[in-house]
Image 1 (cartoon, rainbow, N blue to C red):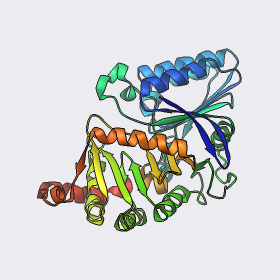
Image 2 (image 1 turned 120 degrees about the vertical axis):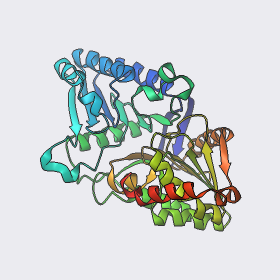
Image 3 (image 1 turned 90 degrees about the vertical axis):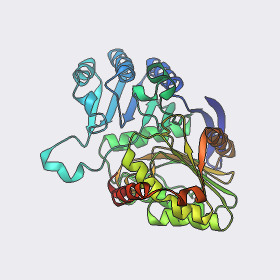
Image 4 (image 1 turned 30 degrees about the vertical axis):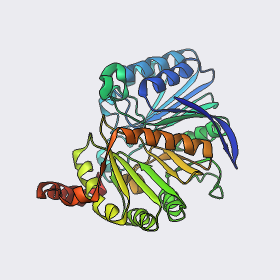
Length: 365
């Protein structure tokens, strides 16, 4: 847990970075239990397990106390929770529960698009966003040293108020709503809930990579880049930019890892450096470019995050936040093994065959 002040052209606020689930969950639950007026919670995976149960109990207690509690869950990611007794208990306690893209035979074409956002807003004063879902897999109490490594951010002030509006607009189904568009500087939230916004995060990332002066450090659990993003990374490496990619060695989606490794060769040839995090599953989604641009949120560097799912990221020109994320990146490298071009060229045909399978399926993962 790291506390810092986000200072940027668009204003400042207090922030806390979390890299361990139990610290994050303790912090979130403490503020939920102390909520006075409202709790808004949006999540992809809300586990039907010990962690999910703790949050469900806290939400029900606040709803019974008269606090407005809204819970927006993805119908696919939280399917085990949806099939449990919890939804009925939550509604009976007064929690407003809504499912994103529920399973209906008449809406089969829309089922591929999921709500991948993870957002909590308490009393319009504090907000949390990042890669952590609410499940036991991210808790040392339940999974000991094999729990997932992720990154999340707590923020207050203006950003918390903006996060509340992002929640409300999707809750009400206002897909055409457009947030105020900044001049691509400052600290602000970026979502993709309509066609106009769909490519914005990818465009911002690609633009910053093309204009990078010193470094591009990327952390992602699912690396299946589109051609333009992969090209921007390779071109930056060729012009001498320190391009580093950190992905997990251990994974919960084997075919996604095959697809990621299929993209290694061209990046290594261009001079990029690739590392695989060894101790446990790495689920963080962050980027640091130079010393004055960074992002943290829910979007992976893959087709699904760029073009299909609903995502939410914080973009910031705050040097303190960028440096904090860079320090975390460097610490993760100490627990990683570098993939060298020489070793990668010597990999066997079995590896090459699995990479081909993954690459052909990358648009659907």
